[in-house]
Every structure is written in structure tokens, then in C-alpha cells.
Amino acid sequence: MVDLSSEMAELWTSLGAPAAGRGRVVQITAARRGEGASTVARELALYVARRAGRSVWLVDLDLMAAPQHAALTEAGARYGTLSDPVQASPDGSMFFTVQPEAQTAAGEVWPDARYLAAHRIGSARWWVTRFQRERLAPGQGVHVLPTSRYWDSLRSVVDLVIVDGPSPERSRAALTVAPFMDQTVLVVAADQPDVSAPARLRDEIADAGGDVAGLFFNRGPLLKAVRA
Image (tube, rainbow, N blue to C red):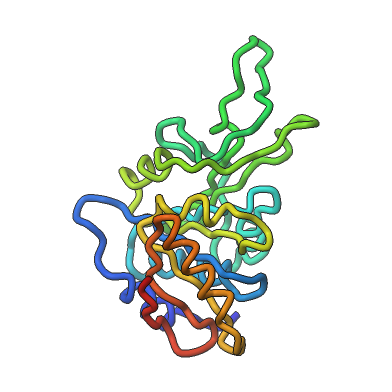
């Protein structure tokens, strides 16, 4: 694995200082598959937790596939061993809903927060989420919600929340949550000559009320401001 610590240091610095006494939520996404957004999200989380000494949550919006949990598990020697699952919501809120609702044996509604787990990674203060799709009953589906409550709850307990948003061709989740992020960074492969798709996504995020911090050119010169 290539050492990306210098690139992540520059990206972290480019994002600017967070507001005093309040955690920050930063979404990393891309207009197309294969641009490297998940790698950037994971490496930024690693850098901020280990080098900057901050507490970090890496929230994976690709709920059904959970690629971040899979990647971290596979590369445990690099990132650290994952802990047993713990609750992923400080106050019981959640950024998605599972419908139709399921009931417990006692006849109570199964809360949405019970579908999401968090795993601590190694000894640093960082965690990754995993949607527990095995808990879904036949006929149930999951939908990302346009609400700020979950993100606000994490801001109160974590220094940095990094949200790995899937590209629009896979899901609209990144656009749904964009208005509730403090910043969104768009990742573009450095060898990709066509930046029209990222420009369109930038405009869509801005139109939805999100803040686009800039473009990160993966495997190339770093963050270049493209303020909306």
C-alpha cells in the first residue's frame, strides 16, 4: 500500500480549522465509480486519528455492501484489528430508516439504530460503521433520510466524522445528506481528463444546500478550490 500520509496531511490542512467546541462532518464522494473516494476517506480517517490525534468516525453510506468494513478487516495488519460491534448512535437517532418496521418478540418496534454497528480500529480513537444487513427481514428496505439529527449527535462526541458517500450512479445517498455536512470533498482520478461529471455533481450539491470544499485529484496534485 502506498503511503498517502503527506497527501492526507495536505488535505486535512486544506479543510481548515473546525469551529471551537464542535465536531465536524466531512463527506468524501465522487461523481463516478473507481475514482478512489473510499480510499481517500479511509486514509484521511487513519491520518487524522493517528497523526493528528483526533477521535474519528468513518461512516459508510454504502449500506448494503459495507465496503469500508470489508477493506479494514482485510487490511488489519495496516489499520488495526476491528473490535466487537458497539452501538453506533449516541442518542438513538439514525440517518436512515428501515421499512416496513419490524417488531421484537415483545411487540415493540425494532429501532433503526439497532441495524448499525460501529467497530473500533486498533488502539487509535477511530471507528467504522457497518450496516447489519443480516438483520433485515424479507421484504424490508433501507432508505437514507434528509435529516441532521444523527450528524448533530456525532458532532457532540467526536472530533471528526468522515462520511464515505457512494457515487450518484450507485445511490443518491451522498446528495441526500449533503445539506447536513459541514463540507463535501469531490474525488477525481488524476488521469481522468473529463471533469464535467464532477462539475455537475458539485452544482447539484450546492443546489441542495451543501458546501463543496473542493476537488481532490487522486494520485495527483492535491486539493484545488472549486468553490460553488
